[in-house]
Length: 338
Image 1: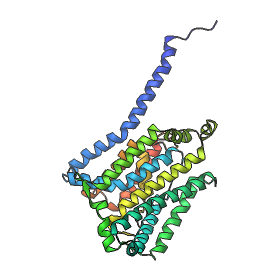
Image 2: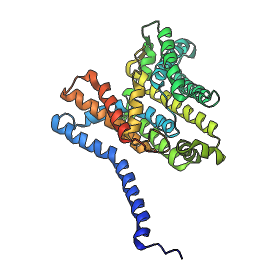
Image 3: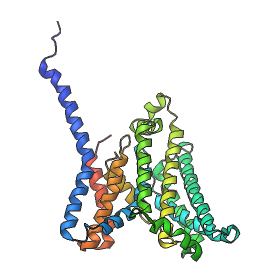
Image 4: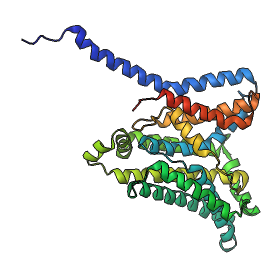
């Protein structure tokens, strides 16, 4: 007769489950711990680091990449990738400036002109995301190839529209638009408020809606999701559109900062956005991720750059190299993780 399982054998599954729970908790706490240690190091290296003005500066500069990273988090969780977000932002910026300059005389009101430009930027981001989603789902092309191709297309068209130079916003429009970046509420710049709102909405969508659960299910196992009657193609298209809208929001905040767009606008934003997502704990193979971790990852990368700028430990021109090293290290640590 078969023997009843011993107490030791019964305890093994429980011990394994407990170990997994602790592993998940450590993964979630990792970005927070890293950020705290960096802040302590920054304070010790330079007294100007732990000031309100510097904190607001870091968070304001984080806002652009952080907003894009929220959308990128959805794409990576679903098992995709988008390498074109920097070039997309550049083309959206140039296009909205050209539109606003072109219609300003007919519209008359600078504020209304800026409002039209903002709506246009968000719509254009959604359209670009829709194109990516359709090429990936209906065209059956790998996301890496699709977005690598559009990376070149977007930046080439911006360079063509700018004739190799810069597209500059007219003076009156620039004055009406500048509060979007330079304005503040309760002492906190507007870009930070928008970043916080986008992150909160993203977290609610990912964790509290059926769409968010479908995104995670597709990233975990797309075939199983199809068997479970999930409309995989529709979810993927919506995910790329969501990222496109996030790029549009980031661009809307970025344009009044300089009031122009050039072939270097948004350069390497895709590297920073992807780095923020994976540093925040999202699995590179998809299926698992957190918006909170992504936000902390974006802030952490900005803090690294800020410390390098304040202390001159290494050249500021090597910031991108540091981010690249961070991506490789995190990818190494995530080997085999699903």
